[in-house]
Image (cartoon, rainbow, N blue to C red; front, side):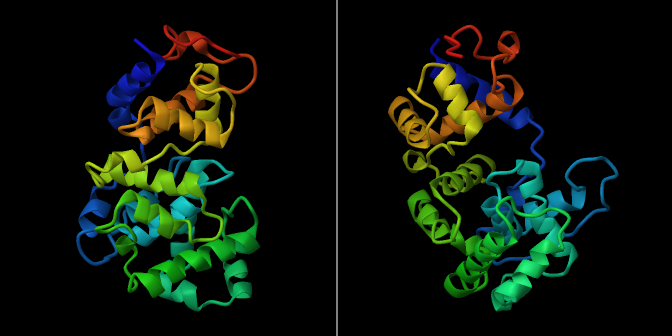
Length: 264
């Protein structure tokens, strides 16, 4: 069995058993109709993403969009908590955010317990662009950003948001495909999100020549052309769990152990 086959096998076995806090069946349904806000449960007392925050991302397409655009340069759990924290201030509404001035947006983000990785000013620009995309181009319906569109069209729209590059755009279409069953038959258009975990696993497993974003994308397109993004989650999860950076990864516990050349 090859490394690529092992990655696909691991994805098939483990993806739906993984502790994904977001469950996006509601987003799939909303993507066929108008936006509505879901109910919220009481806050979890565990030190993890708040349960009502999970429900918010699941049922509110704008919350999903905001979480996704901030998922860069910081722990993903923290990034996806930002829309919940904005909602707690009564501001998780595209039209409200689009109407705010830059100083007011900066003040909003500065007041959150969790802040965007690249600073409140850049975060404000990103948030404003996302709100304008929804209000101006999607008639206030965030799900219309991806409804009845191809992955390539969705990624082009997302990359019009300042700070959102090909990686985040690919991540969004991959999540919508995997969790919401969208884009069936269009998988060739969905790339991996070449974050540090994916790049490291690709390089150590001998799939890519270097730990670079372009190399990771081209590797996935070449080795799994029918659905490049299929290699995204398994490589990310393996990198996060076992293939740690540094010289002491947990190779003996890794699902790739039997086929990985371990170029460390």
